[in-house]
Structure formats: structure tokens, C-alpha cells
Length: 247
Length: 318
Image (cartoon, rainbow over the protein chains, first blue to last red):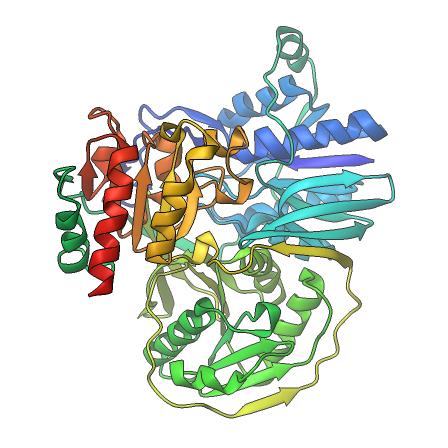
């Protein structure tokens, strides 16, 4: 089975978040970019494990400019066979999904993997869009997935527990913690990644229904109020009367 | 044009999130000068009560299969067309997140997830705000399409009663066969799930071992709070996976988050920094979590947590 893994480039978790151009653009100055952790740690690795079990191939796909190739090469170093970059600014998740779905339809993929969300825009939207464009089921927030070659058994994280579902045929899955264990690329992988194919294709769609008008930073916390450990009555009083978070 | 909200009813009952969403739909409809219809899929006791929170009508569609994106998206899309809705809003819940993309494609709608306040109108655009960069910033979005699909962040607005029970209309909708087969649903009974909890008591490695969790559970019980933990604690199996809050775990937005013995790594903060009030208990004065806290107690948690529990008991008894 041929597997497609969508990978996104995001600012590192510890990056300082700031904006430019009158708070309309993310300030990339000094920001280190990484592969979105859910895409790398869980989606990509589970796809590689399935290939090791059942054969086939793993292709990674990214929508973005040439500067993203660094992140794409890392996915190849971890073990993907091939990469595709759709040469367009990823302006919104619907547009990204349309382009990925069009590529998926033109090629033959059994399962499309995404992370449960990206750590920049936290949308959780991509997998649902792709599944709908392809007309296949979407299994979201998967913390486990076993595939016997015909049927996949997927465990979805839901509020306060899990839901276990069986699905056959093609589907889209979004990866949560638990789906796989992170793999660190080794030297051999890094060397081989340089020779693996990275195909660049032009976008099929750049339409957008939504645009970001403006960013804002949260209000600064007014500073922590330290409470005497011997006086928990005071803490309770403050929670009731000042913060008003308990009755 | 009108607003359609999808009121979730797991196990045949509404949760607080359904009332929040209905009230939010009502407020959005007011901004747009229209009405809010609530859709209920499957059986639920007393569907008309959504009228209290601002629904002008409830539409109920019988469906006894499990959750399936193909079925739900087709069903919701047909209801949206029947009631003439151009704004469809779901909860930013496990199932809501699974539906927004498919609804966006089916309705050719602009989609913005996890919005945290009532939309405004700017010319032809609907303007909404959501947290981005894991809570480190906010973004304001313009939606220019005629149809819109939104998901509402949990605990963003309190559900207020603004009216009385409304009429419930039963609709029959043809749906495709389910593409997935639900084998099992395992959820914890008796506690409010973390994403919906208003009060959360959480603990980390400072607890030294799972056998010490009694004081955390007692404090949670006094408050009627849900228990949570940090990543190392769930990774070592001290506490169940579903209790892990943080970037890779569950993101929460309670009114009160009490964290004991958690240093406050940035990955942990990413999951909890939308909490309205944070109390940090840690014996290390250098713990980074204090910087993100509203109230701090720098002392041994094994002494402080039981004292805090007693103080809450005393105050709540009054």
C-alpha cells in the first residue's frame, strides 16, 4: 500500500512569538522552524511502520516555498521514500488540503496521514478537508491504528476516553500521541536523504475563503501573587473574591 | 440566511457544551439579524430545552449509527440547506474537529476553528478571533465566503438562559451507509472530561509516585474538579494517558487550574495557558510555572495540598 504523509513546517515550540507590519505578519526573524511534531513523531513514523509491515511506499508532501526543503529532507532522513513539494505559500488549510487532495487523486495512495493539528494555527482542519475532497472517511485524533492489510482498527481520542472504529478501503487519519514513537534520523538516513527524489509541482488552487486580518499578543499577566504556605484560607478567599473562579 | 448549531448529545443527554454552543449561536444570530436553529442527531431527553439558551427551533434527525464523518457531514449539510443556514457552528470537540473540514468542503464555506468570541461583521466579511501558536497569540480572521463553518472553543462563553423551551421538529434525512464501524466507546463516567472542565487539579513529578495521588484526588473531590497530570507522569504510567494536559496531550481552558509539583515547561504551558486563573504549588522558587501563574505557593506540596483542601472544605461549607 502506498502511503502519503502531510508534513507542515512550524515555528519551534519554544520560539518567541512576535509580529511585524502592523501586527499583520508573523515575525520569522530569529525563529527556528521544525517539522510539526505531530506530523513527524506520530504520522510519519506510523506510516513507516506500516510500510515495514506490509510493503509499499511512504511519500511525504508539503505545501510551501523552497526554503521548506530542509524540513522535507529531514522526513526523508527519518525514512520516507520520496517527497513532493507543492510550490505555493500555504495561505490557509483549505487551500493546502485542496492541493494535497488533487495530488492524492492523481496518484494512488491508500492512506493519507496528517498530524492532529499544527502547533502554529492549531486548526485540526486539514485531514477533514482532504477526506471530504477525496470522498473517503476521516479518522481524527488517532492514538492507535492497526492494519491487517484489509481492515484498519483505529482508536480515536475523545472527551474522557477513546472510541474504537474499524474502517476498510482508503481513508485519512490524523495522528495524536500514542500512534507511534518518535524516531531520530541516523547518519545513514541523513546521507541517503540527499539522494531521494524531491518532486516540485505547481499548485492546482490558491483560492482562499479566509484571511488573517491581524494578530495580537495576550495581555501580560499582572505578575504572580505569592501566598504564605501557612495561610491557605487567604488563597481560598482570593480565589473566591478576587479571581471569582469558585463560588 | 440563519445560524445552525450542532448540539452534541453523547449517551442521550446534552452536556454543558451543547448549551454553550446554542447560546453562542443565538448571540451570533443576533449580530447577523437572524435566528439560530439547533440540530440534534439521534435521541435526547428534552430537546426543546435548547430554546432556553436562545434556539428559536430544534430540528431532530433520527440516526442510531455511530459517529462517522461521511454520514454526519451529509446529514448536517442537508439540514443546513433545508433550514437555509449559511453559518454552521460546532463545538471544538473531538467530533466537532472531525467535522469542520468536511462541512467546509460540502458547503464551499470558509472555515475557522476554535473561535473564542462572538463574531462581528465588517462589510461583507464575518470577523472571528481564535488563539494561535498554542495560546501564545490571537489571530483575527476575515471570512469572505457566503457560507461559514466555525468551531467554538470550550468554556469560551457561559451558557445563559434567555428564553423558554422551543418547538422540536422531527426531520427525516437520507444518509449514506456508514463507512466506519464503531466497535467500542470507552469513556470515564462520573467526572467532567478535561476539555470541558471548569475546575482542574493537576500534579506532576513532584508527587514522587502514583501512590501519593490521594491528596490530589481528595482536593479534586472537594472542588468537584477533574484531575490532570503532566507528560512525564502519564509517560511513566503513574496516571492514565487521557489525564495528560499539555501540547501533546489535552489542551484545556478551565476557570481554575491548580498545578502541584509541575515545573511548567513550555510544552505544558501550551496546553494550559488559556486557563482563566492558575495556581502553582512548587517548592522550587525558580520553577518557570510561577511566571505564568496568578497565585503561587512556594512550599512542599505534601504539606500545602492537604491544608488547601481543608481551607476549601471550610469555605465551601459556609
